[in-house]
Image 1 (cartoon, helix red, strand yellow):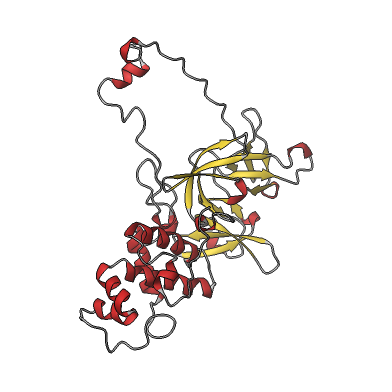
Image 2 (tube, helix red, strand yellow):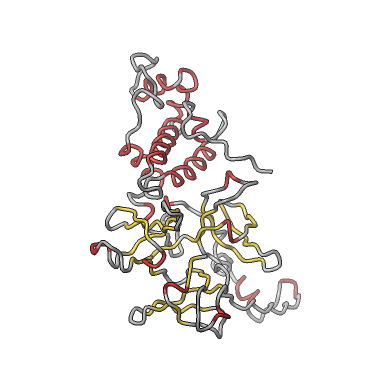
Length: 350
């Protein structure tokens, strides 16, 4: 069974802050920081002072332990030693107070610099896209391993014609008949959809990691999710869709009307109602809005609800194909032959 998430973001021990052993290698440090920096980033936790402090703490811990010289000094002399090494001194001294808690602490600007240098960009939450190249646009610039190169692109020489053309298999073996492709489904997350893991109990250390949907196992009712080289079998309830191109509609602040951003997740408001956190890269701010103030992008998986004229649709899942701005309706594909137009109030994000 995977270990529980044992990190302590307010510990005075850098290793405990990141939740790694003292012999952790560079890969383990990067993996821990990547996950925790996204988890506590202020853009994902607006107006949350505790999360802001945790973000600074994990940034300070990683900034020190990722530097071999400062890490060695920290292991031998603690935070004073690490500061002495940072300033080019051979032995600690004159740096009373230590890091956190107490003493000189990393400020928000420096924490953001560490974050940006790690993920490569000033605004890693602004883009989940990526085309076919690296995944630097994932939240925090997470680079998800998508597997090897495309099959045809990776075949040397005449392999493509030998396997796909009329030449048969090597050694004169007859070609196998290609298997019939599975029918396309619109009621589950599409292959390649990007998701964030949450609510895991037995594998709590994987919460807040980002992965890619490989396929849906209908027999088990679970998704196969690829996360940093591992393939996990997870329920839909443990996945948050990561959506780019979400637009604001009928919001109280005119300057936000029609702005486009990235859906980072959800959180309850004071009354318990779900609010959606949208990072607006162009304005460098994150807002929390109700479901009816969002226009979801094509590809989002939704659940249909409260349709009075066609109650048989309620509870079904479908994929948004488009938004009809004039009619203020989504076109939601349920099956290849069924795509009703639905009001904002009749869909909710799965």
